[in-house]
Amino acid sequence: MTDTLDMFAAAGETLNEMANGPHIGGHAGITEALMRRLCEKGLPLAHLADRRMMKRSLSTLQAHAREYGLAFPDYVPMELRKRIALIQMGDFFEVIGEDAPKVAETLGIVVTKRDGKPMCGVPAHVLDDYVEKLKAAFYVVKIVRAKKKRKAAAHA
Image (tube, rainbow, N blue to C red; front, side):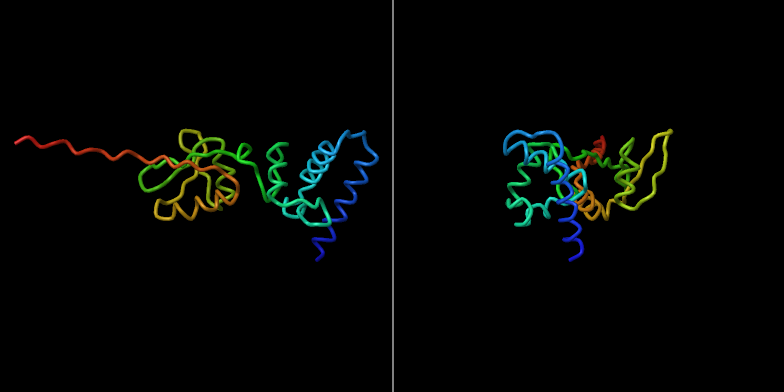
């Protein structure tokens, strides 16, 4: 219950800031400005759907978030999600480059370096579990599997 009270206290503060701030024209402008400020304050989008807050359905608020390019803690529009590739290297799937430290932090794994580039990896047998964690953290994951080598035909 304290989270709800804190949320409304923050929302009231935001509404006061907006009322005392520069003039915002039109209903759409007020909606966008309010959503931007609440996004900056870190309120989850699900809290805005509360009937005492914006009185909108969650799907409507998600549409607004997409339209205005806002990333709330519990919702990130598809076009704002970070895209990463898990590349198969033997029995592991690796993330290589500047994305590796953030991915490693999300998954709770260690960052290593190869040729000076940061990398992190997960074993192939638990790949699905880690992909689910990444998706839950609003990553778009592409899996790049190694091509199987063909055996050369034996000539008799």
